[in-house]
Length: 459
Image (cartoon, rainbow, N blue to C red):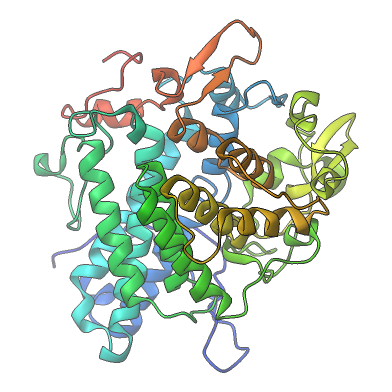
């Protein structure tokens, strides 16, 4: 019997919201699934879809590490890694080895999810017609979101130019069932991967509903699209996508919470959350909590310290300063304080900031003026309204509002900024420095001779 292997990350329990009831379904997908079992019915394809979400929520992807990578690469002598794990320290020191197990796992889990999505898309016709668009939309959302993350970390930034020649990651759009020489594909260009991401997420936005439990919804696809266009410096499309995300989500009663820190350490999604990774005692993976918190809240020893150079960026009276507390002998951020709390992937505040920046750059006022959107963010944290606004002020507001949430290095790269070395202030890394790009894992280059290694890593 021919078998199709769909590699799924192990996970204990995934809670599926059932329409109109409070029931919970607990599923444990196997490591490989026979084709005739996995893809021959509506129920089983939907079960495999849960496996794709399991990879997306894995600690190596949106369960924490990809957020951590951004903060370590973009530390800028504002935070310090003090933990004993060498893998994040390599990113913090801008000296990543090709056998770094964290970045290897992120690549493997990312492509596992992509392969699951490819299998779902091939079998989509067995899904009940009433649910077909939603399931297809969810698979496209997951695939597009992961390709975007992989391209941002393992390839030069879009802002570096030469997008038609600079390499990102391999695009694979068909199921990989048994590894053969045909599966040893080369890396695609940055442009090719970004266009694939736009295609996947745009179609997903069209297909997804506004209500879908804590799974992908149309406004989540629009929100990630706004990130994609922002990285590409396509500010008109970034503005439009952010505005759609705002309109669609606020129609579902999403809103900024009145107290800034109430948006964090929540067991369930807050009104401000557009997309989170669900964390509970059955699925406890949250590497941001693990590394940012302290033993009294179930974390390690406080691996990440917040330095004065960062805290001094905030205005006096800014309620966002309340996140910083002295614990385990040094200053920490309480955004990731509590155990078994959801990982914030997209908050509504980000969409207002994106819309403000994009409107400013385009000289437009779609949805609101840039000043109105920035004052909306400032008022929430008890800062006085501004009467005028500059691009630099918008970018600073974004930096402070989204600090320690996994945005840092990506904003540095797209705005052509720079990073100060954490031990030698005379050493400056440009936004397109090869040391701010992760290497292709050695495991992959050893197995696939067609994978070209990134500059500075040999091979």
